[in-house]
Length: 218
Image 1 (tube, rainbow, N blue to C red):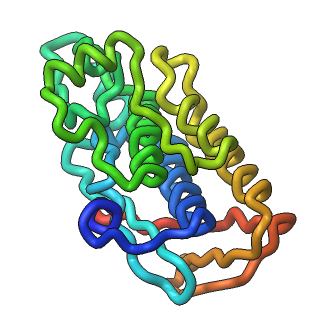
Image 2: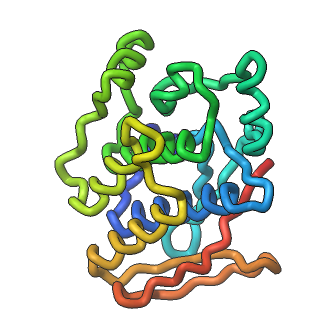
């Protein structure tokens, strides 16, 4: 995703962006809903790979090198935290050296959604100390003017200052699906079923398919 957004500068419709946003949320939701939930801890555009499909893009969640189960992150609170910080995507609690939770992933997803909207790198040309101070003070990146109002709401909820004020990944799925309905155009959704067969269908705003299987690359 990072290369396409910031280097290739390929044209993206809002239908395509919302499709990417939905698939990303479904990938994170899968991790968070496992019997032993996994916290990715390094959500950013670099770790979502996009593959051109017949219509639109398929999303692959990758780089699980610093991912931990929820129990493992709890155990870290009893010793020296094993913190991983990619500063522009890091939640305020991580900058305060607190442990990673599912809600930390959600904050990072919100920054990634901002990238989808802005087509810019977050906090580009800002010094690390300034980024840290700004985030801890509750300041956020300026919202691009062309961002649909309903998607602005999603981003603002994702990067809320306090973890308890952020939605769960399943709630984000519902919100992004609503964004797609409000967008109101015909678009295509695509996925690979469990057997690896490519599927594609055209949908209308009143018919959102939610059975997307997202690839994970370990």
